[in-house]
Image 1 (cartoon, rainbow, N blue to C red):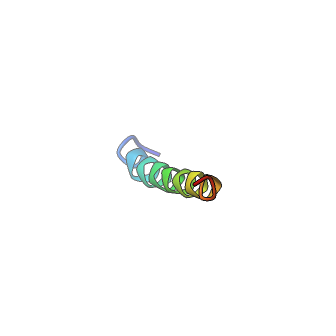
Image 2 (image 1 turned 90 degrees about the horizontal axis):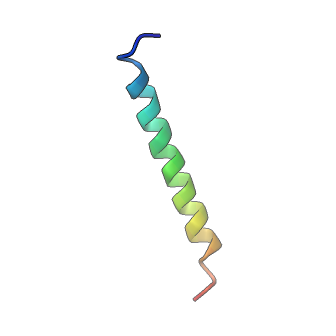
Amino acid sequence: MNGSRIPGLVLPALFLLASLVGLWWYWRHRGDS
């Protein structure tokens, strides 16, 4: 794997991870208020 392919794999993975964490955080704190 060359260096130019790595960002194309890492960026979507980080975006997906951030989305899942955001949804989990929202779901966890949904009933606080």
